[in-house]
Length: 118
Image (cartoon, rainbow, N blue to C red):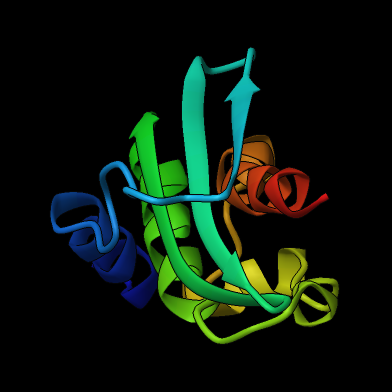
């Protein structure tokens, strides 16, 4: 089993920050019609800083793992900090690039988080 698979499996089986966020003041929904992934990202933002981040999802393992890693990482960041997160950051966090047909699954949480901040 590769490192990529281990981290995806770990965050899929034991996702961090999964569930509704009471007191969230920003949220967005995202979907990937090609595979059926659906995700909601909720944020608590204060003075331009992400204080807390959570997600709910009915999604594939790759999308859930990406959301879990992302919501761990963004606490304490500003909207400007989020602009530097991209596909390369997702791949590095997953310890391997997702297969070409699954890129959208891995990027859906980041795209949804950006919409929540917009």
